[in-house]
Length: 333
Image 1 (cartoon, rainbow, N blue to C red):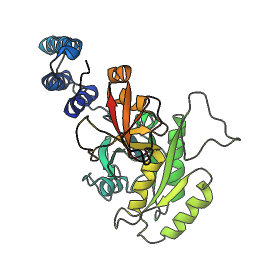
Image 2: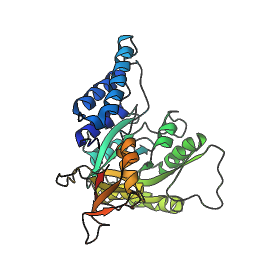
Image 3: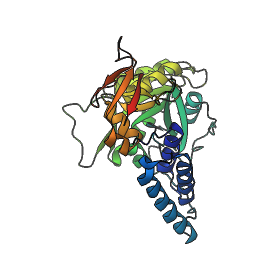
């Protein structure tokens, strides 16, 4: 008998998987149990949830559920693609993230306003993408945890001030500091004549020239194009007057190489408000597994509407059916 798990249950399960504190995990588990359909097909899942809740209650009662003191430099992406934003002092990283996301981050005209990672969610045509602000990288200093944050992300943005008198020094300083931690930024693939130390991570990165509204920005753009054009794809924007931001938002989504898929509950209308993002080339089975491992194991077939459905919208497709951007899928388990 199929479990017929609801979207509300799936949302609670996603919250459980992203929670780090025992009390938060317990709260999410209790919501999952409350939303779980109660029938023979979910007996095993009910028992599993009860055991997890019992174990967490014992952990909390023994004092293990207390929140640890101190600052964490880890940023949970909560299932969303994550793009870490780096750059030298006063490049306008925080202002750019605020303009892209609509979230008010602390912005000031002096360096080191950002002291810890600050996440904000950007949306582009339904897709939710997490942007993470970081402390500035100086030619002589970088917070040691910044490179770990960059290496764990899906992509990075290297933000630079086109009007800065020390543009070249700031750019080289940021790249050198990251490379000292075996973290290399590139937009494209490694060139044939490049070799990297063992343990190196090459992070797909867009170079962003900010402050397009300022004086001498054209000179700065020429400098970046001449010196880094073979290593980075560059976009010029202004966080202040929003010039180029629409193009940047679209480019970030394209750079992630994701597709937007809309799962359709059986018998319900299509809801295109919250797509699931999958890697390009994913299949129906990949979608089911991303929702829940057990769903992937029990998946029989699916119905497809959308770009790859052609004139046969609603047709039945196999588990290995490739998906395309904006497809709608109804899963049968």
